[in-house]
Image (cartoon, rainbow over all chains, first blue to last red; front, side, top):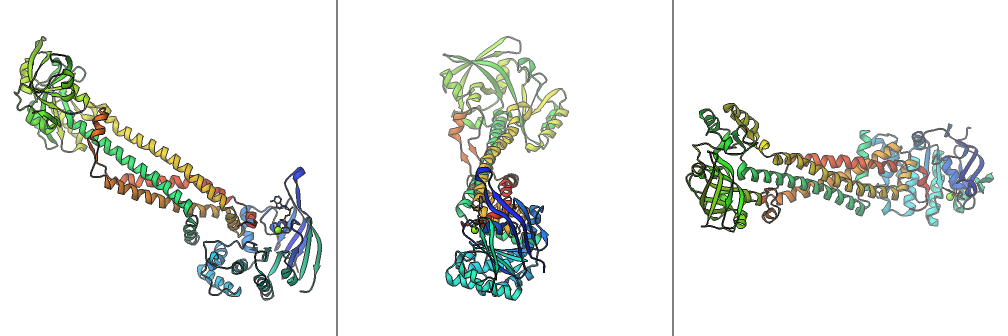
Length: 230
Length: 409
Ligand SMILES: Nc1ncnc2c1ncn2[C@@H]1O[C@H](COP(=O)(O)OP(=O)(O)O)[C@@H](O)[C@H]1O
Ligand SMILES: [Mg+2]
């Protein structure tokens, strides 16, 4: 089976000269379809930077990222937008929902960018809402939902476009234990049912316990990469 | 694309009300800016119109007919005969509302204290009252009662300068038909109140009386006519010129060049004002919108991260700006319409008009709602507003997707 994400010789340096920060140093990584992989490691070890590179949010200093067979190098801003839209789902620590849109509208927003018809958008968004257990709350705006509920909407938004991989950066960091656990459960069940691939940057043990593959980062390098039982 | 617009419009609309303070400031800036432009243009036009009408009604009329050469050298030697049959019938045409003839010669007026230059005007009081506003501006005494009336009507300011008054006598002097000086004493029977320049210049007496005083045999200096329709001026002048090919027929635009240029000056004033107001408005709007974009960097980053293309972000922000400025423009239009409507009964400028004295401003200015201005200026402000906010919108579209990852919310 071909990996869904590959990184080859990936490096990222912020700043220049004396002040240069080597956030990533020569990373080689493959993520296989259907995996739940966690990126762990101390703060500043490069987890977010790596997720940004894989998510085509930022450009590496050197090396190459391929997502679902598509090399990112040399793509224009507009082409990268299309790639994110069709192949990548994001879940952020601070939820990042559009505050003026309801839960359903937030989920539909991505489909709308994809040019999906209104009727289909509606149906798919409602199904996604059901799947993340928020039926009945579809017309609420983010401001009227708890953190746990907002993060579920964010997961629904990330999944509704059927991406090749979902990238989540510290998705549980703002949640209490109960909600954090529920979110992890949700991601696991989505993974089981749809085979969705997750790459999660976290140091939350509740998340780490549920993952099948532990990648540990240290000083911009992969320190340990272990497949284990969940 | 249509589908995209249909969904972006409500999003833009809701985004507008997320920061009521900022939206409010922009709305107020646009509304007040547009209001000032509409009000200023209505006021300037009303003022110009009022000045023009006042000046035309004072003495000028819609136009005048003189002997060839009189305009260059208005004197006893360049007079004309009263209208012949052809000219008479042309003046009786329906386009001409009224007309009369005057004797107008340079001279001096003298009291016990002072001698001043003056223009002596001999009028037919009955016809003059239908053409000129001066017979209606008598503040003391009376106007002349017939063409044979050999008394004098003087302006208020000239009376003050001569230190004369009602019931006193003044001496008028002018060159007569023989080339000698005529000199005669006249009773001051009336004092009129106009602007200072007019008051200081014109002394009125009966037309037949002035002809006797100057030794004339029916000659006159000018025919003054007033038209039914101001718009028919050129046609009317052409018709009269055809009826009197030997005479010099002119519309008011060729008699009072300052007045004629006023119309175009008004246009220039209004556009200068428009530019100033717009520049200030643009600075205000661009500033607030740049700040807004700066505050919303993470949000635009998110849209980019979710896969929105830069161009689409630009369109979305531009729709927001178009809505915002559009609402401000509507507010400004309502504000201006209400102001103009509430002032349409007239603004009393009599005190101001006396103080100014330089142009014959009407004492009361009537603002009029002009549909043309209410389409042109709002449309212009709206389009220009959208144009300048393209800059902040472009900044928004350049927000980097990685900004979405920032921790702070
Ligand atoms: N935009 C940036 N400019 C400069 N340095 C950065 C930037 N982003 C991250 N870094 C640095 O890169 C290193 C890795 O950061 P990050 O990927 O955020 O680590 P983690 O997510 O594991 O905490 C840190 O030293 C951080 O300070
Ligand atoms: Mg991080």
